[in-house]
Length: 524
Image 1: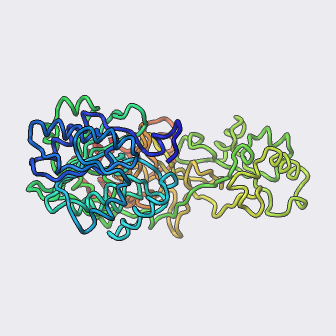
Image 2: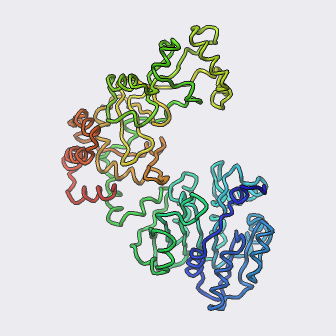
């Protein structure tokens, strides 16, 4: 590992506040004879908590083992009187744990290191072990994941695990397999989240994962606290404040577990209702155009005219805030152009530079003088100045939503950058009806369980998540897209939902008022 100003960041060495380690240890350690492992002990934060608890509970020192890669940190951890192994956890697991021993309790805060910074010799051992146990790591896998999964594998039949894990466990694709696994092996699973950051030095949301393999209490609880102070103040009592939900052994995101059982049952019923259309029955969706250098390819119209590039330009929507409604008209596009927005994209013919117009040749040479042709996406093309494009979008889908995602019809045929997704309706599908029906309370409630939250109140949707959307289409052809567009531009989204719900949910699906109100609560 490199030793420099970014040393802690590279090795994922951000240490756990004492309030968290004390809380986890108090929950996990229940017997003085428990065999305890801390697989990434750092300078001994969790070992210190065990020591404090052991002074009262009589925990035996020879029953506690820590593992730490960094020698100087391992030396610090040794001061608590427990056995501290100097080396990497994965090699220790392979040589000393695999098929030889199990633990009653495993606690810790695994390092957070992305694939490319995960030192090769350790990554190789970790990935081999993961594959041996039936997991499928890839180039997105962060080091915390094998720490968590292999620790679970090292638990005895009645074992308990308590770990500080990045909150991305709830939603990222590379942790989907882990969500399924954890839902399968634990009888009782508790996830504690925080509205405010609990690590002062990093902008990383975390979740406390408490798993119990053998418990009379079956299911999962998600507990949301304000901050570390609330955890310390309320202590173990906070574990009894929310209802238990049934564990769903699937790869689905765990955001749904923030909902009540009543809300979950309603969503499940609607998600199984074959009267509601799956998105894949209505449209295909993909990422927008990736230019490789927007400062070159995107221009305002004044620049286009000045460089005489009118014939080499195509209309494009380059930012989601450029489309205010749910219908992009030619008049609205022209207004954007007249107001100096960068809504023109350089799209010359796919021909050698000497066969292009003089204006295009001059522009390309200017771009090369700026070094734009050396950008990765540009460099790997046959001709760096020719941006690949596939089908034209019938509509756009918002990629990053504040209040809710929406679909915008595109009768102008404008291209779109990857700040939005492009949509093409399947043959025979009424695009106006789909875009109108997209804004209903059920689809918006469902979207909250499908998108990815990155903080700041923004929900992000990749194409795969947009393909999982469901839209009630019974009666959708009766909806007036122009009325919805007008309301959307005025920010009157409650009026939109009142209008579309009446047609789609009450009339189309025969839903009752209390269920629609429950959907509204889920979305909110």
